[in-house]
Length: 190
Image (cartoon, rainbow, N blue to C red):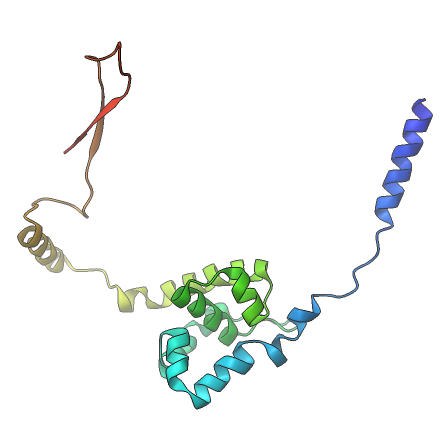
């Protein structure tokens, strides 16, 4: 009986190893990115012929797009090893479309002809690169005098002094009075 079981497991093992090899490197749909993808067709056409549509698509002008691309290109450019990598233009356009429209990654997969898993890596990488390049320009660290002015403005506007970055402190106290009927916590906000 043990020999039959061993033969069965050996047969299953051999059968699994004889799977058919892959027929293609990537899906043919995705391999046609350069010829039929959204960036090479739609975005370039809007950029040349209809700037309003480009602005609606990316929520920025072509000049702003070029400025961002110039700043971010060294951080998002990948090397071509065995096949062509996704260009920085496509990476930035895809990320801006995701941020501007809230499209799902699946719809961007069909639009840009980039794999879903690849998109899930491209968007955070590009967002991190944008933050690294632009955070001091867009959101500079305030000086101590600016912090004092911000605190005064906050107190005058909301009449809430000594509040640091808008947080409350929560303290949890056990309720011992109603222990026989209710066991829980009372939240006091300081």
